[in-house]
Amino acid sequence: MSIVADRIKRIKLSPSVAARAIIAELREQGRRVIDLTIGEPDFGTPAHICQAATAAMARGETKYPPAQGTVALRRAARAQLLESTGVDYPVSAIIVGTGAKQVIFNGLAATLNEGDEVLIPAPFWVSYPDMVLVNGGTPIAVPTTPATDYKLTPRALEDAITPRTKWLMMNAPSNPTGSVYTEAELRGLADVLQRHPHVWLMTDDIYARLNFTDTPTVHPLQVAPALADRTLVINGVSKAYAMTGWRIGYGAGPDELIKAMAILQSQSTSGASSVSQAAAVEALSGPQDCVTEFTRVFRERRDLAIAELQGTPGLDIVVPQGAFYVFPDCAGLLGRKTPDGKVIHSDTDLTHYLLREAGVAVIDGHAYGAPGTFRLSFAASLDDIRKGCAAIREACARLA
Ligand code: PMP
Image (cartoon, rainbow, N blue to C red; front, side):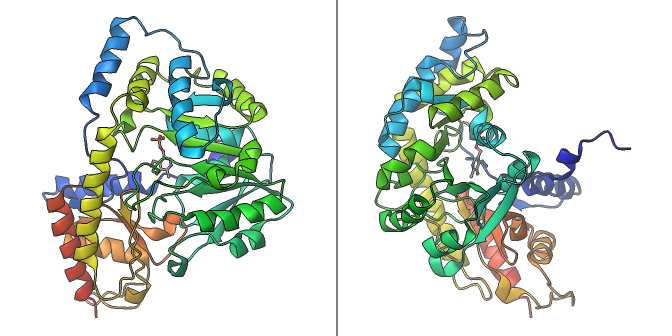
């Protein structure tokens, strides 16, 4: 009999963790590998944010913080949320967690009963289905296609809703596709949700500030404020402020939901690190030019990656509008043969080929709910992006 709970057997290790192990192994053998799998900014946390953490320690802010988050951070989050969603949440309706990831997890854990369905537009961030599964829910992937730039359509949403649907999860700009919704597109989706009052909306806005279009990311609540009484908004500091290791995220929503999440948190982590929360206050309330600069650098890298990959035979590429990933469709390469005669049957075969033959690590797309695709990250140096994308283009061209 296994010691491991059945609930845990439903889930698996994330593919980026698995990729990291293979890259380490190859590098140990002396192979040069360009790593385009990274899911975090390669910049250091800006100095003024680090200084705020040091100052908090010097002031003695090293005791248990309130389980729901410090009032200072919830106030700073309130201002950020007002700007991004148009909703003025009282601090009692805001909860701070150990990364956006834990806030999403808590939101699901606090609400899912066995068999409740959660709609997840595919391609999706790999963790969503597993977080639903471990909490007893049923993840329902709702496919999207390159024809709609991988965006959910009102028709697909309408068709996926059943009486058991509890949540629709949305993530824009998306990991892995970089898709960003327009106001009109969100209005179409909001109209469907308005016809189905039992469906709640969870928006994962972690990449919202890393948007390369001329207009800020539009939030569904700006388009349909009436949905606020059944929406959980999630955001955090990891991506926009290069603070992945500080582990601070936050969520805002109706009182009953946030209270349930706070109770759960009080019996699990007791809240996020006090020092990290002080740093996050400075991130949200201090100078914002670092975010502008990170976005400019990511846009430049996006442009380089697209320029290098464009025209690669067999790859169909939707230009990402935000976040830091390109998500090529490689269905056109399946069935082709490598120079040594091996048939590429799947995206996994292709990513293995790219790693072994081109020395470039990317992640196969089936983990994102999209077989026949792969994800490459441009959270890497311009030099690595140029060399890595050129190597991908040349290796793909060698497939016959
Ligand atoms: N949502 C998405 C879509 C992500 O890609 C990530 C990080 N990979 C997270 C949430 C988690 O963010 P955090 O570091 O704040 O937990």
